[in-house]
Length: 191
Length: 191
DNA sequence: ATATAAATCGGACGAACGACCGAATTGTGA
DNA sequence: TCACAATTCGGTCGTTCGTCCGATTTATAT
Image 1 (cartoon, rainbow over the protein chains, first blue to last red):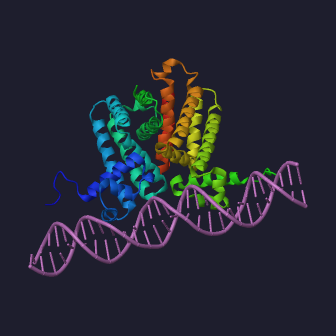
Image 2: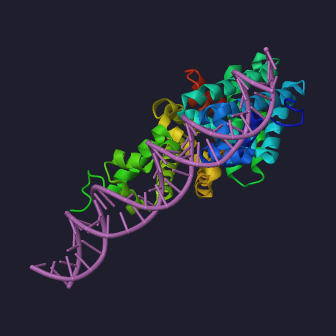
Image 3: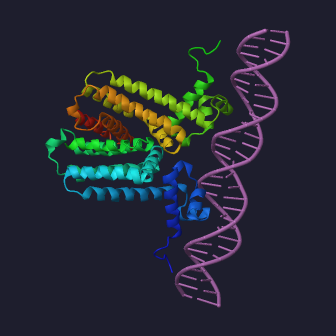
């Protein structure tokens, strides 16, 4: 009997454990022994399934990327008007920061890793591009040009993505409970 | 003869070397031996002057914080109108990303460290607050309320700071030379 | 049932790390 | 000049890390 439906394979257990460890403690503070323990698996199993630490981390990044792309597209296509879609995106981010900050920490952490490692920089760079394209597609496609005030929708999308990211990290660092409301101000672009 | 003007003391040499190493290779990829070599100093000297690795890194962070506060305030007070000051701030950021990306990398790196370490989170959290207050003071103080469209100047300042930070990291990851222009779109807030 | 492959296991390796120590050297004040 | 403190130096200690290996167990196909 292979792969009973409600049971995780070894490699899945490892991947889940790695995801959990890194998102709660940071990639720099997690060892392969930590992950093996969390997965209830012997250390050498990680090398068996993922070759080395970088191979495992790459899979975790891929997992995270899929999660972001899926969730954000879902939050964007819920509504119809550009304004409502922007609001939906903002709410998704505020919600994540409040109830699932680990996911945002993971993004920040791996983006930091990507700064110094070419292997990860291409992965993360693509994620930011995909997210920006998604914002452009769902929010700006239907807008009349006059509302863009001379700025390209590509740049505006990058700016919106950047403002969410940059505000998010401030929320994470600051215990001020009002800070997430700063994200609302992004709607000023559509008024 | 103590501390000849054009000569660095040992602790200054160590601090400069640490700054250089971390800003070009990331704090996670730099060892105390690397820093000692760069500073042309024996390893144990670092412990003598800074006690331990954390003590040294804290001083580097303090150094970086002063640099940011000083340079950004200078770029803000150059102009007089809120619009021009915003433009000056944007230009400072674009300039830094192009000619001194190490400085931005340093900020991103230590902010990432701050996520997981309480010691650094208070330092970085204060920096973001100070920068946000600075933006509020220099850009929004003179603006009429009607231009704020119901959003608090505090939140708008956080959003502006966040959009620069979040756009900056995208610029760093992406080799697209047009991307820094996305920062210009921030001026849409003042039109 | 048997041979072969896949998976699991415990353990060991060399390398790198931060911290620390005692000795040697240099500087300072009486 | 001398005693004492500050500084500099080379080296070592214990720990942790990622990787790798050989042996054992389990699954698969003939």
